Length: 372
Image 1 (cartoon, rainbow, N blue to C red):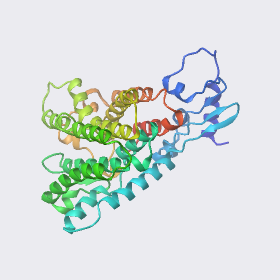
Image 2: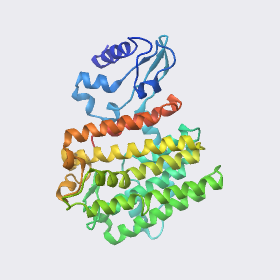
Image 3: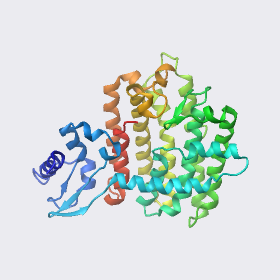
Image 4: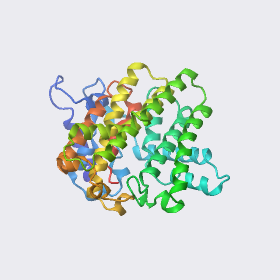
């Protein structure tokens, strides 16, 4: 038995000790069945104990999220996060490739595809799919919406890198869009991706009631618009040089410029999947916590990793005097805050089917521990 597996085994045994009425965390309650003999294996705890550098080389392996529930000695559920992500990313990439074919004008469509099909984590489209499947929907039904989310995300990254915005030269391990196609083409290609996102979502989604689609489109438009992500981005640009900006303003910026995107992905996916109002409310809270955690981790990585490690221009926030959590409260407290928000996100998934919730739980850990 390997060191890691040995530690996992011991942690699982320890998790079942004590009185039957002892309190458990919300995350543990989600994974435990009613049987007190159920063992829960916490890979992150084992990883921390072993302190092995090998475990951090591949973040997909680090966050494999082997949540294995054993009842009376029999394995009843295994979730392989790496395989799940590879399969979902492959499906999303194939759908994106088909949605934006090469056509005239060639250079313009190449610019759209250059950013849209570049290697990325595909967090938002996978969130969209996972939320749909969580409430009983199908991947095929929600795929147009998932593609629409990635089109909008790609536009944001293209425009964020422009000299008038964050002035980034690298994105996803290669030159930013405007460095290859020019600023004018990048701006227009970005606009076109947003328009195409709504068209694709509205015209190719099958099997969803028109009223539900109208609501989903409305949610997406609101969350990326002037009172959503755009509001956060504008305040982010305006607050950089202000010395009197506090944590409330910083949370507002992050909650809008990033968390509104994850909220859009999750809520649109849940709506298409047929979620109840109660489920939508809980998933809205989950997605806001998830997005806030994502941006806090992003702030940390910007000051702790190189451009080569990140696959994008590192240190941009510091050079631009941007408002970030490390700048306001330091790196250690930022990490602690991200962990607390991660815990809060997971608590929103208590009560959902554990197997269907496993992807969202694993993605939360993946984002918290990501290295780029």
